[in-house]
Image (tube, helix red, strand yellow):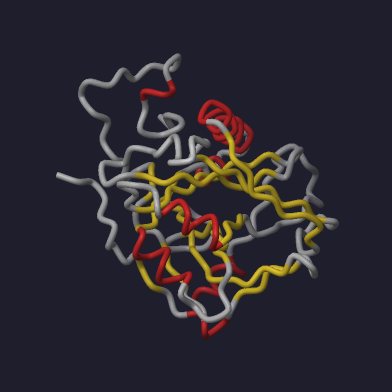
Length: 245
């Protein structure tokens, strides 16, 4: 029996409630910083073109999103297509890696002035290391460790968001599912319009779609196949990039 369905809708959020969720979830991500560390929202971006190409891969049921926090290289998230069984699509039809990393560079500590936005292929091994590094860095603060997770959005949910008027990409925000800044956390997918010329990413308000993932790992993880080795030395044998246990 399949673990995922490509027609899952996710939890639709009206735009005013979604805006409140985003505004209420500002994190201090640098556990080594002093008390002046600026709280900020944790988000990443994937373009409409990239997401649509990922969904066109054979057997792709949707997109898995990992947080991949690296302050030194402005890494935010990693996206990969997955099958109904939860297996990650490691190679695309073009022979390139199926993993994509989003980097965001800002000119201010509050991360409101965007200087650079990039999306690039990344190998599975490097993706796994980025996610592991993120987990270890965030684990310096027991609360922040809880935002190390992966979420799933079905093909239907992604296409619904991308169908929003003027939408050319999706931002994925980390939010508390039931209470701000408290676990369990998930990703809130938001329709946006990105301007390369102006270096702006604008949410679309009432004309946009907002969907909260209800499939996050941990704790709702796709099961490993019985014949797969689960060892620290064989990351490629795992359904997920890392083991959070």
